[in-house]
Image (tube, rainbow, N blue to C red; front, side, top):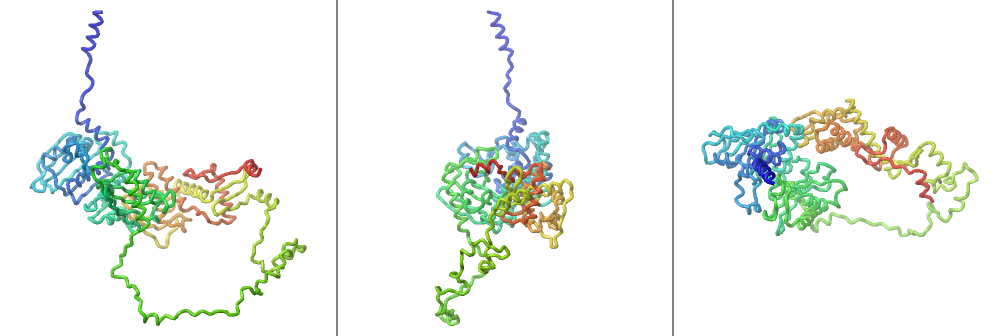
Length: 619
C-alpha cells in the first residue's frame, strides 16, 4: 500500500503543465485569419481608418491585385509618434473607453485589431504627421516585429504601405485567387465605402492605371460615378422619416431590373451591411412590378439610433442586429413601394414651360365640326350586300353531288370563311409516319416518336443547340464573325472590366471582334454570325455579368458561362411561328444529341406521353 502511494506521488510530481500563453506574433497571426482574409480586407480596414481620421481625400494604390502593394494615402488628422507605435498593438483603440461605448458607435473601426493583424502577415510602412507638427513619424514593421521608428518629413495625414501580404504564411498566400478575382474583391470594398461617403474624394490606381477618380459630389452623382452612367435615368429617390428611423437613397425603376448582377446595397449609419430580411422587404415591394426571377437595383441608407443596433456580431462588421426588425421591415417595404408607384418627375430643361391660356378671342378661330345625318337611313331595312333571308342554310350543308363545285361557288358570301377540316383516322396515320409536328401557342412543338407523343419546348431546344455550337467554336478556335458597317462602343464599370482579360480570347473565338479604346471602353467591330437581330451590346453586358458571378478561376466555368449567356440571347423567342422546315430542322438537331432532355443549366426540354399514359386519359 505504501509503495502504491509513493508511485502515485512520483507521477504527480513529474506531471508537466501543458497550457501556456501564445506569443504575440502567433496570436496576431491567428487574429489576422479572422480579420485579414484577402487583400480586399486590408483595403477595407485602411480606408475606414482614414475616414475615421477625418480625411476628405483618400488615394488607394494597388499592385498585383494587392499581393505586392496596397497603399492608402489620406489627408486626415494624422498621429503622434506615440500613437503611431500604439496603433499596431492588439486591442489598442481611440474609440472605446468602456463597455457602454459599444452601444453608441459612430466610427467605422473600434476593436483595435486591424493594424496589428495586418502587421502580423505583411511588411508595413507608416508615414504620419499631425497637422500642427513640423515633422512626422516613419515606422516599419514586418511580421509583428518593429524594424525602424524615426522622424521623417512627410505630408499631413497618414500613408500606409502594405507590401508582400502573407509573405510569412505561404499557405495563406497560396490560396489567394487569381489577380482578376482579388482585384474584383478590392473594387467591391472600395465601391461600398465610396457609395456611403460622397463628401470624400477617392482615387484608385491599379498597376499604374487609374480605375476610379471620384470627386466630392451629391449622393445620386456618386452612385452614377461609381456604377456607370447607364443607371442614371432609372434611379428613383427614396425618402421617409419616422420617429425611429430615417430612410433615404435611390431605387431602380422596375424596367431596370435584371436577372443577375443587380446593384443592391444597404447602409446603416454610414456602414455597409448585409441583411437578407430587409432584402425580402424590398422584393415584396417590387413583387407586382417586375417579372419573377428578376432583381431590382437599390441603394438604401438607414439612419437609426446607434443604441438600437449591434455591429459587434461579425468580425468584418457587415452583419448587424436591429432591435425592432419587424417594424423596420414594414417601413422599408412601404417606402420602396411608394417610391415605385409615385416616381418623382425631374425637369432638366432650363426655363419655364408655356401653358396655353383661355381667351374668348381664341374661340373665334376655331370652327365647331359639322355633323351630317342621313334622314332616310333605316337600320332594319334589308341590304342588297347582305341578304340573310335568301340564304338556304340546309342547302349549304348538303353533301355536294358534284365534287368539282365548291360551296363557296354556290354562295360567294362565304368565300372568306376558312372551312373546318375534320381530323380523320387516315390523317393520323400519315402524321405518325411522316413525323410532322404541330406548333402549340408558339412555344411547344408536338410530334410523334416511337416512344410516344413528344412535346418539345422550342426555345430551350434552340438554347441547347446554340450552346453546343458556341462551345465547339471556342474549343476549335474557329469563331465566325460578321463585321459591322458602323462599329458600336460599349463601356464597362471598373469591376466589369476586371474580368474582360480572362474572356477576350473566348469572345473572339465565338465571333466577337472587340478593340480596346481605353478607359474601360471597347469598340464592337464584329459579332457572331446569326446574331444580327439581337441587341449585341446588351448581349455582351449579360455575358460579362455572368462571368462576374462565376469568376475567372476555372476555365471550363468561364467558357460555360459565356456560351450559355450567348445562347440564351440568340435563341428563338417564344411566340415565334416556325415554318415546317425550321421546325423539322430544330427537332432533328435536338435529337442528334445523346441527351436531348435538358438544357445546359438543367431545364427540361422534352416531355413524352407514352401510349399507355394517353390510353389512361381516354378511359
